[in-house]
Structures are given as structure tokens and as C-alpha cells.
Image: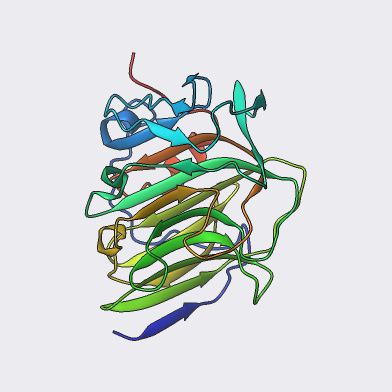
Length: 238
């Protein structure tokens, strides 16, 4: 399988692709969640996972800063030393979803929302492309590669972003609508599980600068309807 580059869709005008997650809303989100980071539970530099799976993450700063978020608190990424280190177990599953509220202070070229892998060998990342000046999602491994190019995004306002992978294609969502997709059989499980970061890169790229809130990672590919429901808040285990 060679390199596949996907073109952008017109926001709001695209049809749903193949979907496989259960449609019940919203209570079953936590059944498939591998990690939920509301940013409301931080102890020292430990970011608590509210999914019940125990995938607590580590913030690179000993005294991380929070501020008013989209829902409750948001973690502040200062662009200098703040990022999140996740456990490799967040990459499990035959399907996969990442979703988050993001408020960028700026979009430095090649800055990441997330980057999972080792950079050169097998990696998956989502962030701002330095080449095309748009949002880009990318999986590459010895088995092949796919690049999905989405829209450019504003700064200093909240935007809901999501990536789903279902074994047939990778889809990018912006504010609950499909923005772009690319066909691929690659899954996050193919990456080298060394650097599992939110807000940082496995290359010498700038760190993300801004705020993030309500991060969810799941082992299924959520449907359009479920992605839209996530924008209203993430159910967590009680």
C-alpha cells in the first residue's frame, strides 16, 4: 500500500462514511473510552483519567496551569514546556477515536494536537501542517501511509476537533462535521509506542500553544452523531 493523500471536504456539505460504533447516546461512550481527560482532576503533574481504565497521564510541568475551559477547566499549553505524556494503552483497538476542544493562541508550523510513535519509523499525528498551512492528520508505517488535509483553523476561539480510524478510512471532524477523510487500513496500533504525546511532536517541532479541554480517546470509531454529542460534554463513569 502506497501513500494516500486525501482532499478536503466542504464543511457542512459532506455525507457520512462507513460507521461501526453503536448509536446509543450518550451513556455508552464510557464503555469504549480508553481515556477521558476533563482537565478538572490534576494532582501534581498527574492528569487523571475519568474513564475508569486507569490511563492517567503525566504533564511535563510539575505545576501545570489551568484556566476556564469549554467545560469546567482547561489545561494551558504555554508553547515552551507544556505537553502531556500518555500511556501506550491509549492506542489499543481495531478502531479508534480522538476528540478534544482546542483553543489555539497561535498555530506554529508543524505544532501538534497529538503525536504518537517514534517520528521516522511508524507514527501517527494530528496538527498544523507547515507545508500546506492547514490541519493535517497522518499515519505512516512500513505497511503504508495516509495523509488527510483539512481546513485552516482560527486562533483564540474554541474549536472541537476529532479524528476517527475504522480500518477503512481516517476521518477528520471540525465542530462536529466531517472536514476531510482518507482511505486506509492502518490503525494507531501500528505505530512505535515510544513517544505518546498531546501538544508535542516526535520531531523537533514547536509545542502547541493555547488551551485544551475534554479530551477523549476510544477504541471504536464514533459516528457523526456521536461526535456531535461529544461537543455537549463527555459522560464519565460515576
